[in-house]
Length: 130
Image (cartoon, rainbow, N blue to C red; front, side):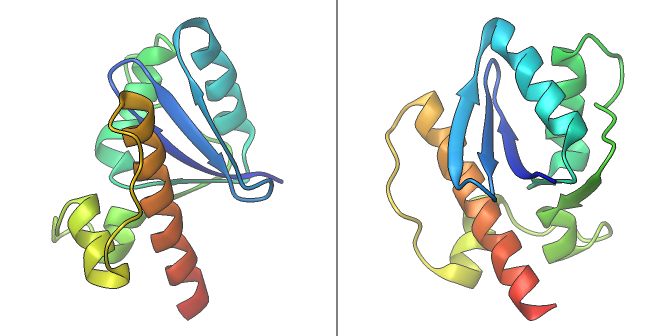
Protein backbone atom coordinates (compact mmCIF):
# COMPACT_ATOMS: atom_id res chain seq x y z
CA UNK A 1 0.00 0.00 0.00
CA UNK A 2 1.31 3.43 -0.95
CA UNK A 3 2.00 6.27 1.44
CA UNK A 4 2.19 9.50 -0.55
CA UNK A 5 3.11 13.07 0.38
CA UNK A 6 1.39 15.64 -1.82
CA UNK A 7 1.61 19.36 -2.45
CA UNK A 8 -0.35 21.33 -5.02
CA UNK A 9 0.31 24.62 -6.76
CA UNK A 10 -1.69 26.65 -9.25
CA UNK A 11 -1.12 24.20 -12.09
CA UNK A 12 1.10 21.50 -10.59
CA UNK A 13 0.83 18.50 -8.28
CA UNK A 14 3.90 17.06 -6.59
CA UNK A 15 3.91 13.58 -5.06
CA UNK A 16 6.62 11.96 -2.98
CA UNK A 17 6.32 8.20 -2.49
CA UNK A 18 7.50 7.17 0.98
CA UNK A 19 8.06 3.57 -0.13
CA UNK A 20 10.04 4.22 -3.31
CA UNK A 21 11.59 7.49 -2.03
CA UNK A 22 10.80 9.03 -5.39
CA UNK A 23 9.40 12.52 -6.11
CA UNK A 24 7.41 13.26 -9.23
CA UNK A 25 5.46 16.27 -10.39
CA UNK A 26 2.40 16.34 -12.65
CA UNK A 27 1.02 19.03 -14.93
CA UNK A 28 -1.81 19.32 -17.46
CA UNK A 29 -3.29 15.95 -18.49
CA UNK A 30 -0.90 14.03 -16.23
CA UNK A 31 -2.66 15.50 -13.16
CA UNK A 32 -5.36 12.86 -13.74
CA UNK A 33 -2.70 10.19 -13.04
CA UNK A 34 -1.71 11.98 -9.84
CA UNK A 35 -5.34 12.02 -8.71
CA UNK A 36 -5.70 8.28 -9.34
CA UNK A 37 -2.52 7.59 -7.37
CA UNK A 38 -3.76 9.66 -4.44
CA UNK A 39 -7.23 8.13 -4.45
CA UNK A 40 -5.81 4.62 -4.29
CA UNK A 41 -3.15 5.38 -1.64
CA UNK A 42 -3.22 3.84 1.82
CA UNK A 43 -2.22 7.20 3.32
CA UNK A 44 -1.99 10.72 1.87
CA UNK A 45 0.11 13.24 3.79
CA UNK A 46 -0.27 17.01 3.38
CA UNK A 47 0.43 20.25 5.20
CA UNK A 48 -2.85 22.16 5.36
CA UNK A 49 -4.44 19.74 2.92
CA UNK A 50 -7.82 19.97 4.66
CA UNK A 51 -8.02 23.63 3.72
CA UNK A 52 -6.11 23.79 0.45
CA UNK A 53 -4.60 20.75 -1.28
CA UNK A 54 -7.65 18.45 -1.25
CA UNK A 55 -9.88 21.32 -2.43
CA UNK A 56 -7.42 22.14 -5.22
CA UNK A 57 -7.19 18.48 -6.21
CA UNK A 58 -10.99 18.32 -6.30
CA UNK A 59 -11.02 21.27 -8.72
CA UNK A 60 -8.37 19.56 -10.87
CA UNK A 61 -10.68 16.52 -10.93
CA UNK A 62 -13.68 18.64 -11.97
CA UNK A 63 -15.40 18.39 -8.58
CA UNK A 64 -17.06 21.16 -6.61
CA UNK A 65 -15.68 19.77 -3.35
CA UNK A 66 -12.52 18.29 -1.89
CA UNK A 67 -11.01 15.23 -3.55
CA UNK A 68 -12.35 12.11 -1.79
CA UNK A 69 -9.69 9.69 -0.61
CA UNK A 70 -10.06 5.97 0.14
CA UNK A 71 -7.14 5.93 2.55
CA UNK A 72 -6.14 7.92 5.61
CA UNK A 73 -5.41 11.63 5.27
CA UNK A 74 -2.71 12.91 7.63
CA UNK A 75 -2.70 16.72 7.61
CA UNK A 76 0.52 17.72 9.35
CA UNK A 77 -0.75 21.25 10.04
CA UNK A 78 -3.62 19.82 12.06
CA UNK A 79 -1.33 17.27 13.71
CA UNK A 80 1.28 19.89 14.66
CA UNK A 81 -1.14 22.64 15.68
CA UNK A 82 -4.64 21.08 16.07
CA UNK A 83 -7.72 22.18 14.18
CA UNK A 84 -8.54 24.87 16.75
CA UNK A 85 -5.16 26.62 16.62
CA UNK A 86 -4.04 27.56 13.11
CA UNK A 87 -0.36 27.58 14.07
CA UNK A 88 2.45 28.54 11.72
CA UNK A 89 3.10 28.00 8.03
CA UNK A 90 5.01 24.97 6.77
CA UNK A 91 8.44 26.64 6.61
CA UNK A 92 8.17 28.01 10.17
CA UNK A 93 6.85 24.72 11.53
CA UNK A 94 9.63 22.77 9.83
CA UNK A 95 12.29 25.18 11.11
CA UNK A 96 10.91 25.00 14.66
CA UNK A 97 11.17 21.19 14.74
CA UNK A 98 13.99 20.37 12.31
CA UNK A 99 16.07 23.50 11.64
CA UNK A 100 16.93 24.87 8.23
CA UNK A 101 15.60 23.14 5.14
CA UNK A 102 17.94 22.03 2.37
CA UNK A 103 17.97 24.22 -0.73
CA UNK A 104 15.74 23.36 -3.69
CA UNK A 105 15.67 25.05 -7.13
CA UNK A 106 13.88 28.41 -7.21
CA UNK A 107 11.18 27.15 -9.60
CA UNK A 108 7.54 26.03 -9.25
CA UNK A 109 8.74 22.42 -9.34
CA UNK A 110 11.43 23.12 -6.75
CA UNK A 111 8.93 24.83 -4.46
CA UNK A 112 6.49 21.91 -4.65
CA UNK A 113 9.30 19.40 -4.08
CA UNK A 114 10.57 21.42 -1.09
CA UNK A 115 7.07 21.49 0.44
CA UNK A 116 6.73 17.72 -0.03
CA UNK A 117 10.15 17.22 1.57
CA UNK A 118 9.32 19.37 4.62
CA UNK A 119 5.91 17.73 5.02
CA UNK A 120 7.48 14.27 4.78
CA UNK A 121 10.13 15.12 7.38
CA UNK A 122 7.47 16.42 9.81
CA UNK A 123 5.42 13.25 9.25
CA UNK A 124 8.53 11.11 9.77
CA UNK A 125 9.31 12.92 13.05
CA UNK A 126 5.72 12.52 14.22
CA UNK A 127 5.81 8.79 13.44
CA UNK A 128 9.05 8.37 15.38
CA UNK A 129 7.46 9.89 18.50
CA UNK A 130 4.12 8.05 18.31
